[in-house]
Length: 351
Ligand code: ASP
Image (cartoon, rainbow, N blue to C red; front, side, top):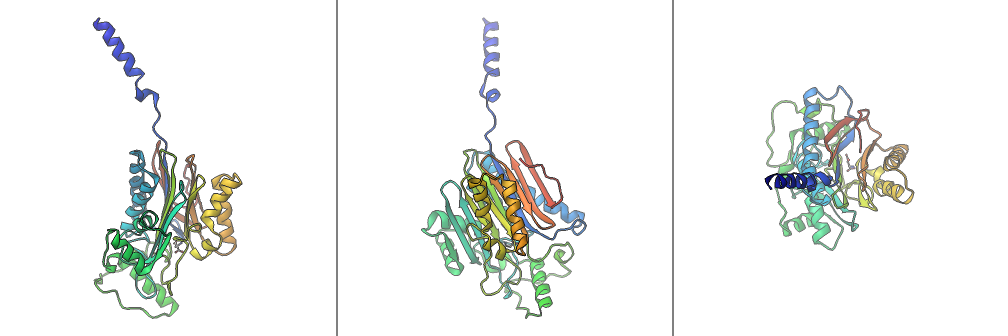
């Protein structure tokens, strides 16, 4: 009898659910901006810091997906990590306008429902990506701008900060440098920011003055796909300039089983509706997503623009494409821990 019971327990154990089921499938890919990032420009320490920051951002979204969370939650989680990290041009650490302010843009899109939310020129909301999501889910609109957008953020309980929260010495030095080169007037240092002594890392680590935008695409275990992007825009932008990031279909798009987030010279990405076009080629023309991304990025280059995209399809295929020497990027899925890369010629095995 005891022997029979022991055999029964063994048999049940072998045929148990763990032996039969594969882990639910999910994929996430991120970027932290594209631009002139040459080998040798980043010190080994700075290179390692960027890789660690990218890994942490991928992992924040991967954890959501691993636990059965939605792709929208994963996109928001990863982007918030990068918005809080001054190494990226989004949230804290955003570049400055010519007037010496930070003016933040973000967008998010749900590929299942084609709902979207976007904000432009916000300066008081700690996480612009959370605000874009609130616009999508809690307002009848798709895009809000400026003070009205911040007021909406406050009304739905999103964390508000003093504009000085977004200040970093590194980005201030970049602004002063750019304005000096252009012969433009240098504005007053923002109230509430203390000058720090010594040169900032920015002027020596090879970062150029524009890039560092962040974006995420993800598909969750239920096959729902989403995209999001967040940026401070371009250094010394004027006149309320808005780039491609919050323009649905240009810098951010998700739908028809495909999601894209872009980074680069926004004026070109807007004119070629880059994100929507890549998904259109993939969906309507059945073009593999890598080929579609490469085609549209080469078109961006042909009209004088530079930058890159991350793209994802609902089967978990990831594409990275850029016409710059580097793009901070990474991905993970149910089988693979976060993989990250910086330089364009770096080999990254993609799912
Ligand atoms: N695309 C962003 C913009 O034009 C900038 C960037 O990605 O670096 O605002």
